[in-house]
Image 1 (cartoon, rainbow, N blue to C red):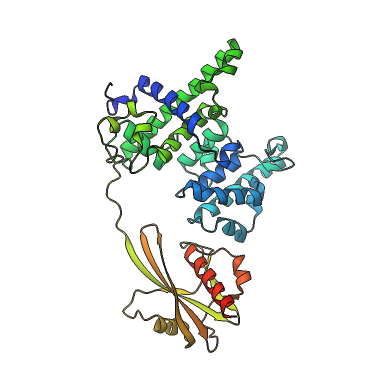
Image 2: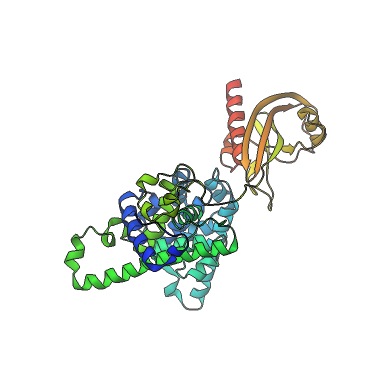
Length: 419
C-alpha cells in the first residue's frame, strides 16, 4: 500500500479520503447513547459538560437523572445551589456544574431582556419534550463560546452536534486520532502543533459540510435513488448531518479503537491512511511529554457523633470541592501526626471514644490523597467545633465530596448496627 506522508497529508485529497471512511464507520459502529437520541442543544450541552474528564459509562446515569430533574435551561437556571450540587455529586470537578448554572442564568437573563424590548418571538421555543417550554439555547458559535464554562472544544461540539455547523473540535480523543493518522510527533500542547491540529479538525469538518451540500443538490435530481441508498450520505448516523457525524466519529474512534494504549489498529477504518500504523509508532503518539509529578498528601477526618447526629461542615467558595459537605478534617503536615492529639489540639475537646473507622485513598488532579477517618464520641461539645449536626437521613439530602460520602455511608451503617 502507499505510505502516508507525515504533515503533508494536510492536502485535500487525503482529507477527502478520510471523511467518507470515518462517516461510514460511525454509521455502523456508533454507540447508542441517550444524548444521541436528541437534537436538543441543552441536553447535548449538559452531556458535553459532564463528559469533560469523565468516562461515558459514568456519565449516563448522571445525565439521565439531570434531564429528569432539570429538563430545560430555565429549570437549570432556577434550581437551588444545593440541588445542582446533589445532582452532580460523584462526578467531581464541581466548578463545571456551577458554570453550567451561571450560563443557564445568563441565557435566561439575556432573553428576558430581549422580551422586555419587544422581541418576545425570539425568546422562547418549544423543546422536544411535550408541554415543556424552554428558553432557546444560542446557535451562533461566538455566543456559545462566550458562555461561562464553555471553551472552544465544547462550543464546537455543541454547534456541530446540535446544529450541524462545521465547527471543529479537539479533545483528548481527537488529538490522539489526528496525531496518529498524520504522524505528528511534536507535543500537541505546544502552540504551533495545537494550531496545526485545530486546522486539521477544521478541514475535516468543512469537507463533511461540503458533503451535506452536495447531497442536498443531488437529492433534488434523484430523490428516489438516495432514499434507498445505503451510502454514508443517507445512513442513520448522519441524519443530523455530516458535520455532526464527522465530529462524533473522531471522538468515537478515539474512545473505542484508537485508544491510549493497545489500540485496535487491525479493525481501524482508516489504518491505510495512518502514519503511526504504517511506521509502528502508535504507542509513541501523541507525544504528551513528561507527566507532572504526583504529590502525596495525608488528611485526618473526624466522624464526630452525638445522639445519632454527626458534625459536618460545608466547604467555602473558592476552594476545591467548594459548596460540598464534609466531616471535619485537617491535613497532617507537621511533626505531630498522632490523630487523637491533632483532634484535641484542633477542637479543644478530649474525646470519650476515639477509634479508627476507615482509610480512603483517592486522587484530585496531581495529588494522591490518603484520608484516615476516626469515629469520635465526645464527653461534651466544645464551641470550637464549627459545623452543623445532621442525622443520617438529613445527610443523604446533601452533596458530599466523594471520599466523605463514603465516610457518611460507613458511619450510618455503623450506627444502625449498634442499635
